[in-house]
Length: 302
Image 1: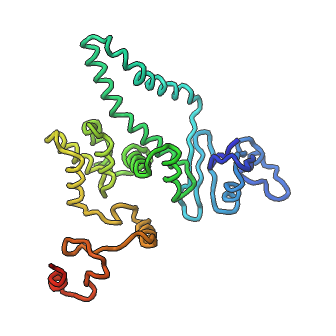
Image 2: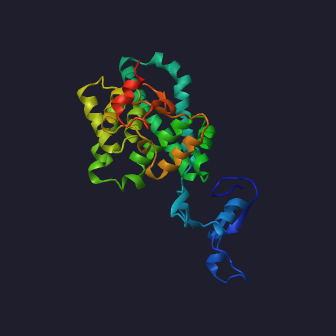
Image 3: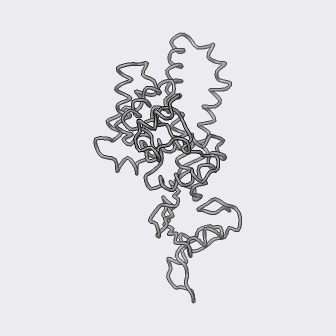
C-alpha cells in the first residue's frame, strides 16, 4: 500500500478524510469507505494540521492548500480504464521500431511510401506523449522546488526537458489552462502540425518562453509557410527582438524575486557589467562612480 498523495510506501495507513472527531461520530458519510484514504504520516499531518484540504470523488483526488489557495497535487481516475492495454500499445510500437524494421525490405513501392508517411506521423506525436507524461508527473508531485529534479531523475531526462515539455503541455494542451485563454489565442486558430518538422518540439518550447505563446506559435507557423528554411534559431531571435530576455521573462512573475535572490546566494555567481559590449566585473566598471556613461566608457576603452 502506498500513500494516495505522495506515493510513499513508508508508514502508510488508512485514515478518514472527514475526521470522526472526539467521541466518535454517527454520521454515515464519515464511516463510508469513500471517506477512507491511504496516507503516510507526513501527508496525514499536513491534512489535519498543515492546512491541506482533500477533495475526493470517483474521477479525481485533489489536494489544495487553504492558506495559499494553491493546488498541491491532483490525480485523475476513469472507470473501466485498462492501463495494461494502454501500455501494450506502446509495446507493439516498440516492437515495430525494433525487430519490425527488418520487415521493411519486403514492402512494395507503394507500401514503402505509406510506411514512411505513418512513421512521420508517429515521429511528430511521440514528443507530445512525453510532454503529457512529464506534465502529469508535475501535477501529482507534492515536493515543491525539488519536484523537477526528482522528476528528471525518475524519468532519466534533463531538468530543462522536464520543465519545458511540461510547460508546453500546460500552455497549449491542458484543458484547464486553454479554457482560460482568450478566444483569439485558442489552439483552434493554430495548426500545430504545420510546424512539426525536424525538431518539432522546440518551436513550441520557444513559443512558451515568450509572454504571448499562442500568438508567437501562430507567427512561427506563418513564417514557416512562407520560408521552409525558417529555423528555430530565427524564431528565438524574432522573439527576443520584441521581448528581450530578463528574469521576469524566464520565470513566473511571482517567483522572479525569490529566484533572483537564490541566484545571488550562490558563491559561483558573479555579476558583470556589459555596458560597453565587454563583460567587466562590476567592481571595475565604474558605473556608480561615473554618472556620465560616455566618460565611463572612454575611461575603460583601450
